[in-house]
Image 1 (cartoon, rainbow, N blue to C red):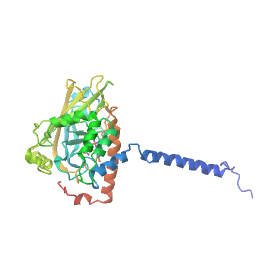
Image 2 (cartoon, rainbow, N blue to C red):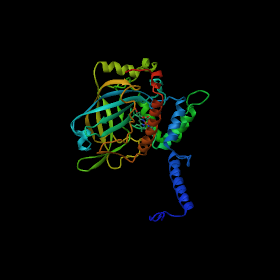
Image 3 (spheres, rainbow, N blue to C red):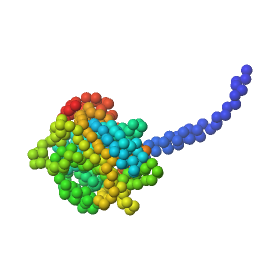
Image 4 (tube, rainbow, N blue to C red):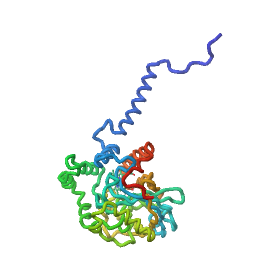
Length: 363
Ligand code: HEM
């Protein structure tokens, strides 16, 4: 009986096939190793940044954001007046209401830090557009950022590492960092001239990085945005400076009396204005467009609220808004993703971690 009439078309050189498979495995493994930064230890990767945030925080805080760890969730909506449509075709700018989930926070990696641990507060928002798209943004209460590049941000983090002897950053190291990075001056000067607000409700929040807005006719312009409070600014009081958690208590009290409002102000760049440098403000004379009102009417705990499992990655944008050439944006996207992966993994492995945390349950 003949064995088989089907010709054997496979190559006969078994060692050649094994070598080819081996080479392929090496290329794939090398790709992973390069992406993870194992082959280039000096390269700034998201894991180097996040590991450094964890070291600076002093002790692990599983389940919490690696930066802006102390915070609370808020809910509300954005009422567009239609003016933003002159700059962007994003559906969020057509007249009407868009639901919003947000998070107020204080920078730093410790979810139990005193509210005064940083002069900066933040507001992150996720707009849920009717067409299924989302606009996510993370804003700080300063119009400029301290540093220009991710590498400088990393150096700033290293300079803020606690000294093992005192448990606090070494002021000499911070001073040396600022002295060798004069780009930080506009930020330092702004913070000196603007005491922190007495409330999360009476601070302005700035997107800081530039973005590219494209209108319905296809014209693209560089734009920055800010949420400007309707509640008048009042500086922090001496009594508040002595309290650990006055920001949450103040917000809860204000929301008991009714919703809080901010105006969304879009600022349009002129040719030549820097779009890749978050340390530089654009001149005041630039065109400002009031695009509508953000209304926040409910706060919940970050341990159980709707913002807990949101990654406020600033590059998640609807059609009509795109990232600029600011190098911080890609670094933010990568770092937030890794922080999100680590904290949601910790939540999944230890579902009760948030119940045991000192901040407790506010919802
Ligand atoms: C290279 C520069 C930066 C790095 C590496 C960085 C890193 C981080 C990380 C790791 C988080 C935690 C993210 C999470 O777990 O969800 C975070 C949160 C945050 N960052 Fe940044 N950041 C940078 C620049 C900025 C800038 C320029 C702004 C302001 C425009 C900003 C505003 C925020 C805000 C508002 C949050 C809190 C988001 C939330 O409430 O969930 N960051 N940052």
